[in-house]
Image (cartoon, rainbow, N blue to C red; front, top):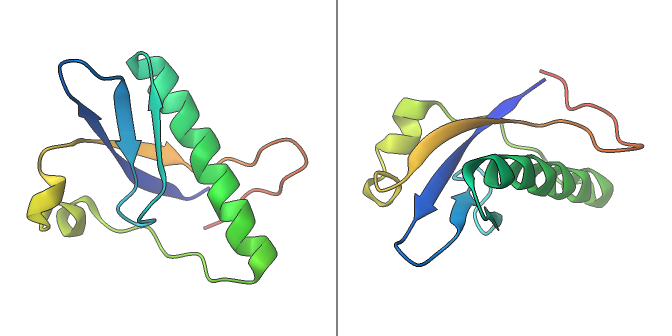
Length: 94
């Protein structure tokens, strides 16, 4: 199962946001870290499912080193998010 880097961002008066450098525009947020992580897995699975349905390529996961070379990513805390299949979905294999 592939794992992608998610970046957690938190401002003083906000939920815990998660973005994915490998999938620009895919973001989610949770009230706490556990919620953010769970919703990140769901958002990633749904996005990948959409790519597959549209016949689009699924990028290979970037390395942490590559992600952190972008100065815009250095404000986030990196986590690994598994590309888990949802109900009725097939696993994204490596």
